[in-house]
Length: 356
Image 1 (tube, rainbow, N blue to C red):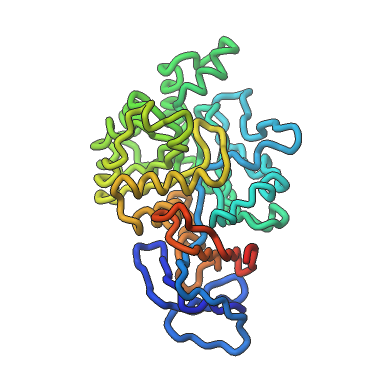
Image 2 (image 1 turned 180 degrees about the vertical axis):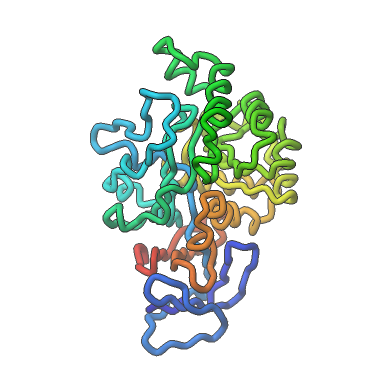
Protein backbone atom coordinates (compact mmCIF):
# COMPACT_ATOMS: atom_id res chain seq x y z
CA UNK A 1 0.00 0.00 0.00
CA UNK A 2 1.32 3.44 -0.97
CA UNK A 3 0.21 6.96 -0.07
CA UNK A 4 1.40 9.68 -2.45
CA UNK A 5 1.23 12.92 -0.47
CA UNK A 6 0.79 16.61 -1.29
CA UNK A 7 1.39 16.52 -5.03
CA UNK A 8 -0.04 18.67 -7.79
CA UNK A 9 -2.23 15.99 -9.36
CA UNK A 10 -3.00 16.23 -13.07
CA UNK A 11 -5.89 13.80 -13.41
CA UNK A 12 -5.69 13.40 -17.19
CA UNK A 13 -9.27 14.66 -17.58
CA UNK A 14 -8.29 18.33 -17.54
CA UNK A 15 -8.55 18.82 -13.78
CA UNK A 16 -5.57 19.80 -11.64
CA UNK A 17 -5.79 19.07 -7.90
CA UNK A 18 -3.39 21.08 -5.76
CA UNK A 19 -1.78 19.45 -2.71
CA UNK A 20 -3.74 16.22 -3.05
CA UNK A 21 -3.01 12.69 -1.90
CA UNK A 22 -3.50 9.37 -3.69
CA UNK A 23 -3.92 6.08 -1.83
CA UNK A 24 -2.86 3.00 -3.79
CA UNK A 25 -3.89 -0.43 -2.57
CA UNK A 26 -2.87 -3.47 -4.55
CA UNK A 27 -3.06 -2.63 -8.25
CA UNK A 28 -5.72 0.09 -7.96
CA UNK A 29 -6.23 3.68 -6.90
CA UNK A 30 -8.45 3.53 -3.78
CA UNK A 31 -8.74 7.13 -2.57
CA UNK A 32 -7.97 10.65 -3.79
CA UNK A 33 -8.22 13.65 -1.49
CA UNK A 34 -6.53 16.01 0.92
CA UNK A 35 -4.91 15.00 4.20
CA UNK A 36 -5.41 11.28 3.67
CA UNK A 37 -3.98 9.04 6.35
CA UNK A 38 -3.31 5.29 6.28
CA UNK A 39 -1.09 3.79 8.98
CA UNK A 40 0.10 0.81 6.97
CA UNK A 41 0.91 2.75 3.80
CA UNK A 42 4.39 3.63 2.58
CA UNK A 43 4.44 7.39 2.11
CA UNK A 44 5.76 8.96 -1.11
CA UNK A 45 6.35 12.68 -0.62
CA UNK A 46 5.26 14.56 -3.75
CA UNK A 47 5.39 18.04 -2.25
CA UNK A 48 6.23 20.59 -4.95
CA UNK A 49 6.10 17.91 -7.65
CA UNK A 50 3.79 17.13 -10.57
CA UNK A 51 1.79 13.89 -10.48
CA UNK A 52 0.36 12.39 -13.70
CA UNK A 53 -1.45 9.27 -14.87
CA UNK A 54 0.87 6.93 -16.73
CA UNK A 55 1.30 8.17 -20.29
CA UNK A 56 0.04 6.02 -23.17
CA UNK A 57 1.69 5.60 -26.57
CA UNK A 58 -1.20 4.17 -28.62
CA UNK A 59 0.76 3.04 -31.70
CA UNK A 60 4.25 1.57 -31.43
CA UNK A 61 6.36 -0.94 -33.35
CA UNK A 62 8.96 -1.17 -30.61
CA UNK A 63 8.97 -4.69 -29.24
CA UNK A 64 8.23 -6.29 -32.61
CA UNK A 65 11.86 -6.18 -33.73
CA UNK A 66 13.35 -9.17 -31.99
CA UNK A 67 16.77 -8.90 -30.38
CA UNK A 68 19.31 -9.45 -31.91
CA UNK A 69 18.03 -10.08 -35.47
CA UNK A 70 15.94 -6.86 -35.75
CA UNK A 71 13.46 -8.81 -37.86
CA UNK A 72 10.15 -6.93 -38.02
CA UNK A 73 7.62 -9.45 -36.74
CA UNK A 74 4.74 -6.96 -37.09
CA UNK A 75 4.99 -6.78 -40.89
CA UNK A 76 3.22 -9.76 -42.46
CA UNK A 77 3.57 -8.94 -46.15
CA UNK A 78 2.26 -12.11 -47.78
CA UNK A 79 -1.32 -10.82 -47.92
CA UNK A 80 -2.47 -7.21 -48.12
CA UNK A 81 -5.63 -7.86 -46.01
CA UNK A 82 -4.89 -9.49 -42.62
CA UNK A 83 -7.69 -8.64 -40.17
CA UNK A 84 -7.31 -11.71 -37.96
CA UNK A 85 -3.65 -11.27 -37.09
CA UNK A 86 -2.83 -10.28 -33.49
CA UNK A 87 0.35 -8.32 -32.85
CA UNK A 88 0.48 -9.93 -29.40
CA UNK A 89 2.48 -12.76 -30.93
CA UNK A 90 5.06 -10.36 -32.40
CA UNK A 91 6.10 -8.68 -29.14
CA UNK A 92 9.56 -9.42 -27.77
CA UNK A 93 9.51 -8.75 -24.00
CA UNK A 94 13.28 -8.32 -23.83
CA UNK A 95 13.16 -5.44 -26.28
CA UNK A 96 10.24 -3.81 -24.47
CA UNK A 97 12.21 -4.05 -21.23
CA UNK A 98 15.30 -2.58 -22.88
CA UNK A 99 13.38 0.53 -23.96
CA UNK A 100 12.49 1.41 -20.33
CA UNK A 101 9.45 3.41 -21.46
CA UNK A 102 8.55 4.26 -17.88
CA UNK A 103 11.61 6.50 -17.60
CA UNK A 104 9.63 8.95 -19.74
CA UNK A 105 6.44 8.23 -17.81
CA UNK A 106 5.00 5.90 -20.49
CA UNK A 107 3.29 3.05 -18.64
CA UNK A 108 1.18 1.55 -21.45
CA UNK A 109 1.74 1.06 -25.17
CA UNK A 110 -0.51 0.07 -28.05
CA UNK A 111 1.69 -2.34 -29.96
CA UNK A 112 0.71 -2.25 -33.62
CA UNK A 113 1.25 -3.85 -37.01
CA UNK A 114 3.33 -1.56 -39.23
CA UNK A 115 2.20 0.46 -42.28
CA UNK A 116 2.82 -2.30 -44.86
CA UNK A 117 -0.73 -3.57 -45.39
CA UNK A 118 -4.12 -2.11 -46.21
CA UNK A 119 -5.32 -4.12 -43.20
CA UNK A 120 -2.39 -5.29 -41.11
CA UNK A 121 -3.94 -6.87 -38.03
CA UNK A 122 -5.01 -5.96 -34.52
CA UNK A 123 -3.38 -3.65 -31.95
CA UNK A 124 -2.68 -4.99 -28.44
CA UNK A 125 -2.38 -2.69 -25.40
CA UNK A 126 0.27 -3.69 -22.86
CA UNK A 127 1.91 -2.30 -19.74
CA UNK A 128 5.62 -1.43 -19.94
CA UNK A 129 6.77 -2.80 -16.57
CA UNK A 130 9.14 -5.79 -16.84
CA UNK A 131 7.03 -8.94 -16.59
CA UNK A 132 5.87 -11.95 -18.59
CA UNK A 133 4.06 -10.55 -21.63
CA UNK A 134 0.84 -12.38 -20.80
CA UNK A 135 0.69 -10.49 -17.49
CA UNK A 136 1.12 -7.10 -19.17
CA UNK A 137 -1.83 -7.20 -21.51
CA UNK A 138 -4.54 -4.61 -20.90
CA UNK A 139 -6.52 -5.51 -24.03
CA UNK A 140 -5.48 -7.87 -26.81
CA UNK A 141 -8.01 -6.93 -29.51
CA UNK A 142 -7.99 -3.17 -28.97
CA UNK A 143 -8.22 -1.82 -32.53
CA UNK A 144 -7.82 -2.78 -36.18
CA UNK A 145 -4.74 -1.35 -37.91
CA UNK A 146 -4.76 -0.34 -41.56
CA UNK A 147 -2.73 1.83 -43.91
CA UNK A 148 -3.28 3.84 -47.09
CA UNK A 149 0.30 5.19 -47.09
CA UNK A 150 2.87 4.84 -49.84
CA UNK A 151 4.53 2.09 -47.79
CA UNK A 152 1.85 -0.30 -49.03
CA UNK A 153 2.71 0.50 -52.66
CA UNK A 154 6.43 0.13 -51.93
CA UNK A 155 5.94 -3.36 -50.45
CA UNK A 156 3.51 -4.86 -52.96
CA UNK A 157 4.46 -2.89 -56.07
CA UNK A 158 8.00 -4.23 -55.79
CA UNK A 159 6.53 -7.72 -56.19
CA UNK A 160 4.47 -6.60 -59.17
CA UNK A 161 1.20 -7.30 -57.42
CA UNK A 162 -1.77 -5.24 -56.33
CA UNK A 163 -1.71 -2.61 -54.95
CA UNK A 164 0.98 -0.81 -56.94
CA UNK A 165 -1.00 2.44 -56.85
CA UNK A 166 -3.09 4.51 -54.46
CA UNK A 167 -6.13 3.64 -56.54
CA UNK A 168 -5.38 -0.02 -55.85
CA UNK A 169 -5.02 0.64 -52.11
CA UNK A 170 -8.41 2.30 -51.87
CA UNK A 171 -10.07 -0.32 -54.07
CA UNK A 172 -8.90 -3.07 -51.73
CA UNK A 173 -9.93 -1.12 -48.63
CA UNK A 174 -13.37 -0.44 -50.14
CA UNK A 175 -13.80 -4.12 -51.03
CA UNK A 176 -12.85 -5.18 -47.50
CA UNK A 177 -15.33 -2.76 -45.95
CA UNK A 178 -18.25 -3.10 -48.35
CA UNK A 179 -17.94 -6.65 -49.69
CA UNK A 180 -16.37 -8.43 -46.72
CA UNK A 181 -18.34 -6.29 -44.21
CA UNK A 182 -15.15 -5.65 -42.25
CA UNK A 183 -16.62 -2.99 -39.94
CA UNK A 184 -19.53 -5.16 -38.85
CA UNK A 185 -17.48 -8.33 -38.47
CA UNK A 186 -14.78 -6.63 -36.38
CA UNK A 187 -16.62 -4.22 -34.13
CA UNK A 188 -13.63 -2.31 -32.82
CA UNK A 189 -11.97 1.06 -33.42
CA UNK A 190 -10.02 1.41 -36.67
CA UNK A 191 -6.56 3.00 -36.71
CA UNK A 192 -5.42 3.79 -40.27
CA UNK A 193 -2.13 5.36 -41.35
CA UNK A 194 -2.49 8.32 -43.73
CA UNK A 195 0.21 10.97 -44.05
CA UNK A 196 -0.52 13.29 -46.97
CA UNK A 197 -3.51 15.52 -47.71
CA UNK A 198 -4.49 13.24 -50.59
CA UNK A 199 -4.40 10.12 -48.44
CA UNK A 200 -6.39 11.76 -45.63
CA UNK A 201 -8.99 13.26 -47.98
CA UNK A 202 -9.49 10.01 -49.91
CA UNK A 203 -9.85 8.08 -46.67
CA UNK A 204 -12.45 10.51 -45.39
CA UNK A 205 -14.37 10.27 -48.68
CA UNK A 206 -14.33 6.47 -48.62
CA UNK A 207 -15.59 6.30 -45.02
CA UNK A 208 -17.96 9.28 -45.03
CA UNK A 209 -21.09 7.14 -44.81
CA UNK A 210 -19.68 4.52 -42.43
CA UNK A 211 -20.40 4.29 -38.71
CA UNK A 212 -16.83 3.92 -37.50
CA UNK A 213 -14.59 5.11 -34.69
CA UNK A 214 -11.66 6.18 -36.82
CA UNK A 215 -8.20 7.34 -35.80
CA UNK A 216 -5.58 8.42 -38.35
CA UNK A 217 -1.91 7.67 -37.68
CA UNK A 218 0.74 10.23 -38.71
CA UNK A 219 -1.81 12.57 -40.37
CA UNK A 220 0.78 15.30 -40.88
CA UNK A 221 -1.30 17.16 -43.47
CA UNK A 222 -4.45 17.14 -41.33
CA UNK A 223 -5.04 20.85 -41.97
CA UNK A 224 -6.12 20.22 -45.57
CA UNK A 225 -9.00 18.00 -44.41
CA UNK A 226 -9.82 19.67 -41.12
CA UNK A 227 -13.52 20.23 -41.80
CA UNK A 228 -14.04 16.57 -42.70
CA UNK A 229 -12.08 15.50 -39.60
CA UNK A 230 -14.22 17.75 -37.41
CA UNK A 231 -17.46 16.50 -38.91
CA UNK A 232 -16.64 12.83 -38.25
CA UNK A 233 -14.78 13.51 -34.95
CA UNK A 234 -11.79 11.61 -36.33
CA UNK A 235 -8.83 11.17 -33.97
CA UNK A 236 -5.18 11.69 -34.91
CA UNK A 237 -2.11 9.92 -33.54
CA UNK A 238 0.80 12.12 -34.59
CA UNK A 239 4.07 10.49 -35.53
CA UNK A 240 7.45 12.02 -34.76
CA UNK A 241 7.39 15.62 -35.97
CA UNK A 242 11.19 15.73 -35.84
CA UNK A 243 11.70 12.71 -38.08
CA UNK A 244 13.16 14.05 -41.35
CA UNK A 245 11.77 17.48 -40.36
CA UNK A 246 8.15 16.42 -40.88
CA UNK A 247 6.86 19.85 -39.78
CA UNK A 248 8.72 21.58 -42.61
CA UNK A 249 8.20 18.79 -45.13
CA UNK A 250 4.42 18.82 -44.71
CA UNK A 251 4.13 22.53 -43.88
CA UNK A 252 2.39 21.61 -40.64
CA UNK A 253 0.60 24.39 -38.77
CA UNK A 254 0.15 22.88 -35.32
CA UNK A 255 -1.80 25.90 -34.13
CA UNK A 256 -4.72 24.55 -36.19
CA UNK A 257 -5.01 21.73 -33.67
CA UNK A 258 -6.99 24.18 -31.54
CA UNK A 259 -9.89 23.71 -33.94
CA UNK A 260 -9.85 19.96 -33.37
CA UNK A 261 -9.42 20.32 -29.60
CA UNK A 262 -12.38 22.69 -29.40
CA UNK A 263 -14.41 20.32 -31.60
CA UNK A 264 -13.74 17.36 -29.30
CA UNK A 265 -11.49 15.35 -31.64
CA UNK A 266 -9.09 13.06 -29.82
CA UNK A 267 -5.35 13.67 -30.34
CA UNK A 268 -2.38 11.54 -29.26
CA UNK A 269 1.34 11.05 -29.88
CA UNK A 270 3.56 8.10 -30.69
CA UNK A 271 7.27 7.35 -30.96
CA UNK A 272 6.51 5.77 -34.34
CA UNK A 273 6.80 7.63 -37.65
CA UNK A 274 6.03 6.11 -41.06
CA UNK A 275 5.64 2.73 -39.37
CA UNK A 276 9.08 2.62 -37.72
CA UNK A 277 9.63 3.40 -34.05
CA UNK A 278 12.22 5.51 -32.32
CA UNK A 279 13.19 6.22 -28.72
CA UNK A 280 10.76 6.97 -25.89
CA UNK A 281 11.85 10.64 -25.81
CA UNK A 282 10.04 11.27 -29.11
CA UNK A 283 6.70 11.00 -27.32
CA UNK A 284 7.56 13.88 -24.96
CA UNK A 285 9.15 16.00 -27.71
CA UNK A 286 5.93 15.81 -29.76
CA UNK A 287 3.87 16.89 -26.75
CA UNK A 288 6.19 19.86 -26.20
CA UNK A 289 5.86 20.91 -29.86
CA UNK A 290 2.07 20.97 -29.55
CA UNK A 291 2.22 22.96 -26.31
CA UNK A 292 4.58 25.47 -27.94
CA UNK A 293 2.04 25.84 -30.77
CA UNK A 294 -0.43 27.32 -28.30
CA UNK A 295 -2.41 24.34 -27.02
CA UNK A 296 -3.25 24.48 -23.31
CA UNK A 297 -0.95 22.29 -21.19
CA UNK A 298 -3.78 20.27 -19.66
CA UNK A 299 -5.24 19.62 -23.11
CA UNK A 300 -1.82 18.26 -24.07
CA UNK A 301 -1.86 16.04 -20.95
CA UNK A 302 -5.19 14.62 -22.14
CA UNK A 303 -3.47 13.77 -25.43
CA UNK A 304 -0.89 11.78 -23.46
CA UNK A 305 -3.34 9.96 -21.20
CA UNK A 306 -7.13 9.72 -21.43
CA UNK A 307 -7.51 10.36 -25.16
CA UNK A 308 -5.24 7.53 -26.36
CA UNK A 309 -6.99 5.31 -23.80
CA UNK A 310 -10.33 6.21 -25.36
CA UNK A 311 -8.99 5.59 -28.87
CA UNK A 312 -8.11 2.02 -27.89
CA UNK A 313 -11.15 1.30 -25.72
CA UNK A 314 -9.25 1.00 -22.42
CA UNK A 315 -10.30 4.22 -20.68
CA UNK A 316 -12.18 2.20 -18.08
CA UNK A 317 -8.84 0.84 -16.84
CA UNK A 318 -6.11 3.39 -17.61
CA UNK A 319 -5.57 6.97 -18.79
CA UNK A 320 -6.57 9.02 -15.74
CA UNK A 321 -6.11 9.27 -12.00
CA UNK A 322 -9.50 8.16 -10.74
CA UNK A 323 -10.67 5.84 -7.98
CA UNK A 324 -10.89 2.24 -9.20
CA UNK A 325 -8.49 2.62 -12.11
CA UNK A 326 -5.11 0.94 -12.43
CA UNK A 327 -2.45 2.55 -10.27
CA UNK A 328 -0.23 3.73 -13.14
CA UNK A 329 1.25 6.94 -11.74
CA UNK A 330 4.26 9.08 -12.65
CA UNK A 331 5.80 11.87 -10.60
CA UNK A 332 7.74 14.54 -12.51
CA UNK A 333 10.02 17.21 -11.09
CA UNK A 334 8.17 19.79 -13.20
CA UNK A 335 5.50 19.86 -15.90
CA UNK A 336 7.04 17.83 -18.79
CA UNK A 337 5.37 19.77 -21.62
CA UNK A 338 6.34 23.13 -20.16
CA UNK A 339 9.94 22.45 -19.21
CA UNK A 340 12.71 20.57 -21.01
CA UNK A 341 14.37 20.19 -17.61
CA UNK A 342 11.48 18.15 -16.18
CA UNK A 343 12.36 14.55 -15.43
CA UNK A 344 10.67 11.48 -13.98
CA UNK A 345 11.44 10.96 -10.28
CA UNK A 346 9.00 8.15 -9.53
CA UNK A 347 6.85 5.73 -11.51
CA UNK A 348 4.53 2.90 -10.55
CA UNK A 349 2.66 0.50 -12.82
CA UNK A 350 -0.20 -1.60 -11.51
CA UNK A 351 0.68 -0.41 -8.02
CA UNK A 352 4.29 -1.65 -8.25
CA UNK A 353 7.17 0.83 -8.09
CA UNK A 354 9.35 0.55 -11.22
CA UNK A 355 11.36 3.76 -10.74
CA UNK A 356 12.12 5.75 -7.60
